[in-house]
Length: 333
Image (cartoon, rainbow, N blue to C red; front, top):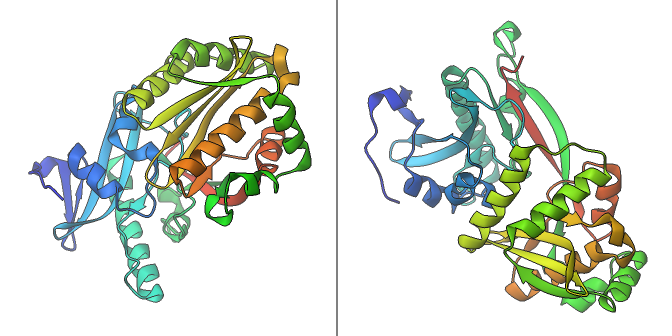
């Protein structure tokens, strides 16, 4: 892993460890690629698509990075205190300790996160992390300033995502036969009406996304529109995302954006024209994107949240298994 020199003002030293609050991008991405908590959302190429300033923060034990985190800014000098829109799993990442005994892993990771969190909290007045569901131990956040709560404690918010383990099926046809009956029926009906088209057209996703929000009586800001298009543009250009469109007589009635890393496909955006809901275009697209994941050899599909009643049940009906994750924030008013 390449190293870079950093100035003293960007580092904090304690107990022989060092925290670098301005890590080099190449060093950061190399660390992310080996962390068990890695996701597409913490690579610098995705972070650039958010059109926001951010710090790449790493914790060193001698010459080895043992932990890292992304701190995103809402505006200059002001870190976010709620999760950044349209993102997931931008929390603590740890080095791979799987070669150690289980009891050693737990102890080492606890001490690492405890130290790292203390340094982050001393450097930033506030920050918010959306933790990976693979981060097993939240005690460093629960116990922060346990005996002196007036100095500030973390807010910890439970959320759920859905994970589809592709390795549990012999092939796509076997998967289809196992989903909820109504989804199989929708997929069959929609396949007679619709055609699949892969596209990188930002306008298609933006238009359908706006219609989806309008149907739900949710105001969508200009910033959110810009962000949707930027995420798609960077994903297509960086070759870590694909957008499928459901076409009805050459008209796009649904769009789905999947992002990818080395093991996971992430269902980030799904947008539909409400005037064509009876075509079941959403089911049609998702099933085709899942089929594509099978063909790519992807290990799992992350449905990126099952935290609303209707959408959550839809994802569960596609055999997504619940995984809890947590939003941890400190310093918010």
